[in-house]
Structures are given as structure tokens and as C-alpha cells.
Image 1 (cartoon, each protein chain N blue to C red):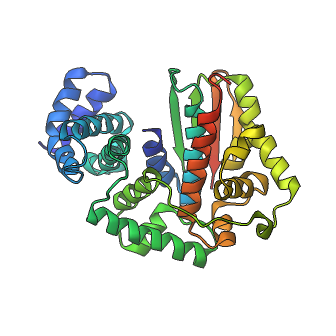
Image 2: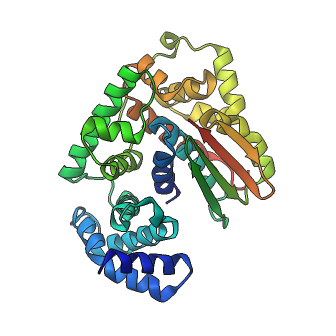
Length: 89
Length: 235
């Protein structure tokens, strides 16, 4: 479901299809890790940028996977409750 | 039901009003049933309709009426996305309805042509304009691209792709995969190396391998799914 949201909001933010696809892939990686965990996602689109925050992401796992996620999106930031991915046009 | 009434129900769903949700599902039933008919015979209708309702309610929670898009048009990609997920789970491989396949062909052709002419990946608006499709049709096609299974790629010779040991090491570090990378077949490993080792974009990989960006995307997605499946739980 998150992928559908990313498609719609990514398009609205003016991201390219490749940026949207890469972001969707990054989210799939995040969600596949501990798939049974309850998570909250928030998406904040604005012109030229889309931020996606995901809660309940294991810090140690994120530290290991951060460099990989950084290839797929513009910025990866650890937040108090999880991670924020930012894609900039 | 008027669009004003539909938007009132959508607002109720956003506020957590369960009764509004039930009324919205009833009001939008023709949309869900119409889309479910596209997959008739492949998956039980009840499963499709249930998936469609999930998509509908997801759309209601994120709908912004101030942007001027009718709710039905906004919700359609969500409903279709859930149905495709349902079909993918219950009836592989996905058989794409003809009208959607036609939209997908036009979308794919537009992406290829625009990527070449603009020398960058196009936006959804640019694709729609080029392919004479509305934004919803483009989004639906893109969602479909992500849902279908990967297609075969001829075996590739890594030595011919100019990959060095450094590139392999960098990819392994980024993916933190160790021996798991070796479990991928040559074609999948090649695409993963080029993306995460050399940090080439999907379009650059497509150009280098002489395949479409869509094909690269599918191979990457399938490879990452395979690698995640091998990941120890809670790792």
C-alpha cells in the first residue's frame, strides 16, 4: 500500500519515475525487515521533494543498511522513532 | 451520490468515523466492482473486492479535497494497487487486461523516448503529456510495472561489463551481505553490483546492458527480495 502512496505523492511532488521507483525499493527493504512489526509511516510531499518517515526501525540494522538506502534516495536520516528518507528532484 | 457527499464521507473516514467508512464503501462499490471485473476468472471476486475496499479506505485517509481531484480518480490507483497485490499473491503470473496493457505499453514507450531525449528520467506529468494519457492511467501503469514478475535476461559476462573487484567489495559493504550476494544468479548479481557498487542509475544500467529501465527495475526488485528472504529474522 505504501508503494501506491509513494507513487501518487511522488508524482505530485514532481519526482521522476526512477526516483519514485528507487524510493519504493528502499521502503520495501525497510518494511521487509521485521515485517510483523507495527509501524507508522508519514509522507510529506512538497514541490520538488518527498519525505517519508517510518517508525520502529531497528537502529543497528539501520546503521548497517544506511549506505545501501543512501544509494536509493537523496538523504537517509535517523529519527527518534525510526528513519526519514528524503528524495529531492 | 454527489461529489460533495462523497467528500463528506471521506472526511468522516479521516476522522475515524466507522459509519462513514461503511457508507463510503457502499457509495464507491460500482468503482470497486468495475475494477474487480478486469481480473474476473483469475481470483475469487470476493477477494478482489475486499482488496479494493482496503485500497479505497487507504485513499480516503490521504485524500486532499483542496487539490481539486475528484475522489474517484484519486482512489482508482489505490484500489487497483491492492487488487494487483491480491492477484499477485493468488494467481501468478498476472494477466494484464488489454486496456491496461495498452496504457502500460504507451507509458513504457514514453519513458524510453523521454529518457533518451531529455537525458534524464521523466516525471509522471511529462509521461502523461507525451503518451496522451491522464495522470491516473500513468500511475496505474507504473503500479503495474512494480507488481509483475521479473522477466528473463540472457546470461551476462561480468568481465565484459567492466566490473572490478573494488565494485564488488563496495556493493558487499553497502548491502552487508557477505556470502549472500553469491546466492544470486549472474544477471541479478550484475545489476546489483552496478547499482550499489558503481552507483549507476537504473537508466545508466539499462543503457550499459542494452535493456530497458523497467527491466532493470524488475531485476533489482527481485534480487533485493531474494536477499531479504535470506536475511536472518531480526538481523
